[in-house]
Image (tube, rainbow, N blue to C red; front, side, top):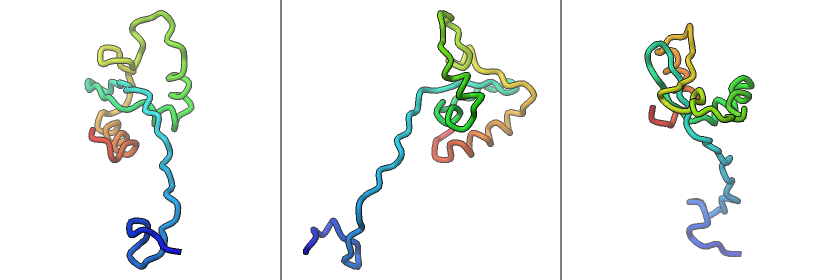
Length: 99
């Protein structure tokens, strides 16, 4: 049985099936205000890793136009936290995303 050149490794063995990465559903951007800084980040990790945020982010928006977290003018305000600490959290949650 022969394989095409691009289907084998350098030692001639077949690499096997290609595993597809887990599909990420970004779900848009969410805005937070910590101290006087407004941060934006993809929503998916907050909903994925926190039951509280999962509940908040999946609530129906209703008829209100000013949904908390939806834009820079209506961020989710996090009281009692330092902006530097929240920035560090975002870097852990999204290590490959340019923040």
